[in-house]
Image (tube, rainbow, N blue to C red; front, side, top):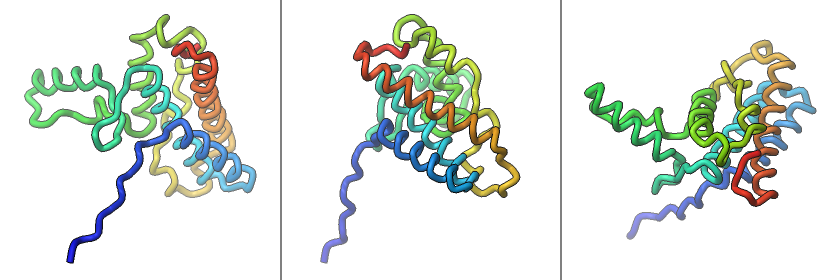
Length: 176
């Protein structure tokens, strides 16, 4: 008897996932499910950022489908050698969760200002609306997330999705 096989996992579709999470966050917000709405708004933003990084700013997928940036990986390798670390610090180059992911987006976009990242996009990411947000926030109580927090996170997710869509529609490969 042979062991059952697991079907291959398709590659991530971050652009589509960002829109699905955003739409579901809006439904949750409309039903006064603030924690779920905020969590999904954060996931929508994460997926939109990963789509932007992959489609426009030079990130790639590992053979397991995890996004990373080659330049950040090289810098992590240099850090490992400089500091005598035993392992490559994955958090430095793998694209994980907010708010850390926002910092990676800013660092990468900052290197491409005027090429792939135009002035409107640079202005969009100038301040991190997810500072203090954590994916673990889904475990918090109703009082931890204010209506203002939720509105800010929903707007940021929307703006990131729109930035990706605009670049896609224009077909220039540039984030305006």
